[in-house]
Length: 176
Image 1 (cartoon, rainbow, N blue to C red):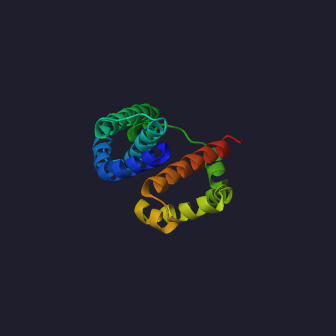
Image 2 (spheres, one colour):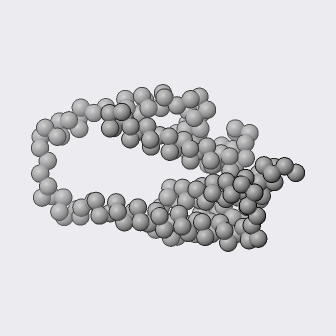
């Protein structure tokens, strides 16, 4: 069996065995944030898969997966802590002055048009995946079935799509 086939087989096996358990573990550590937990699990399996492709052997894949997921959880919690420092308590928000000019600028922004513009920059497969997941609200397993790919592959494509969209939004809002 080739190295890639072995890596794919072990990834598929571990994904089926541990995906839900890892998700629940991350979810509990991230105060119920489903999206953050999903991201941590996907990142964990990406690291695992890349190590498998590099020929790394695992005596205990479960331990590696949990340790890796825990590292991603810690990073996410640090990121959340930084974000919470940037926000202000609701009671203090009343004291912040917002000018009429600023409110007028917000009213002039056509967010639907921005979304359409960015989505039109996606290729056909990305648009299909986006539609299935975020418009039709279909789960990863059904997306995998519809596309004729494995669940880990569907999960990977969703993660890449989310990252691409985040980068596009960032570039768009920075005028780039």
